Amino acid sequence: MSSFTRGFGGRARRERDPRLPPGQYDTGADWPVLTAEVTPHFTLDRWSFTLDGLVDRAKTWTWADIQALPSSDYHGDIHCVTTWSKFDTHFHGISLDVLLDQVTIQPEARFILATSTTGYTTNMGLDDIRGGKAWLAWEFGGKPLPREHGGPIRLLVPHLYFWKSAKWVDRITLLHADEPGFWERNGYHDHGDPWTEQRYQGD
View 1: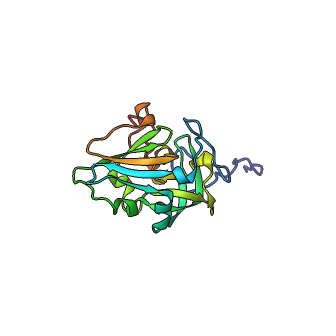
View 2: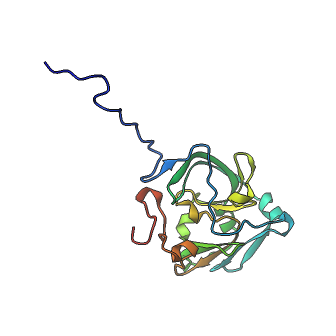
View 3: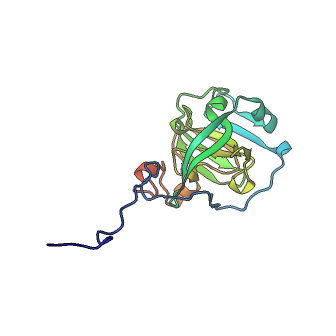
């Protein structure tokens, strides 16, 4: 007759949260601060945001202009290429669809390059910021977005790794051809889908 003591079979394996993409961990209440630049200082009366490139006429909005437009919320998860994910975030801002609807996009536009006031850049397909996929966010958790997390406004593209959600963004340029941004020129993937682990060029 065979027998084994309690616990011999080892610990039961914990169920992995289905919201967690491969290679990621839940950072819980923390929100790590990661940046390649020095955190800039702003005054809102001098802040502006520009859409240019392949549009019939470039358009610039002031802080007051942006605040006067219809705003909306994002409730959901964010994922950083450094392997942390944060569940159930709440951002408030303006859908990029609202701003893109105020310019006439030339038919050859296929890509965008987002630029921050620091000079940081990141590239995406135009389709990655249309159709309710991207915002300019100025609140997190019901409070003004902290400066270290990109306040007063950052780009929010939650279906891609978070380096695409450029902090302190002040310009989006529409392009015919893809133009790699800062991290993409330094080995990160052009697209950055967390669910297929597009972390580095060649993934």
